[in-house]
Length: 120
Image (tube, rainbow, N blue to C red; front, side, top):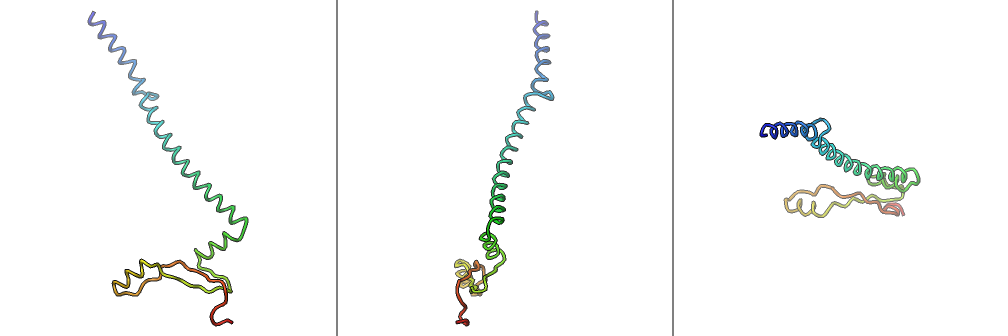
């Protein structure tokens, strides 16, 4: 009777082996499910980025406001009747003054509407 129980136990183990460790076993299914969740998260991030890029493209196609904003902040361009003023950031000026050096110009370019001081 003991040998029958041992044979049944061996048969049970042999039947369970493909279920847990085989090509389509549970361990493989869990691993593929984890990879699927990671890919879904990555896809959500990419969809969000794509939606932002799509909105930016629509803005650039529809009006000149987005183009003008990019020209001002990325290229430092100003209109013919504007004065260009650049203001350095306060923290950089405070550190440079304490060190006895001239502050680097790290501010954002600003344009002021109106005529220049020499053109009345």
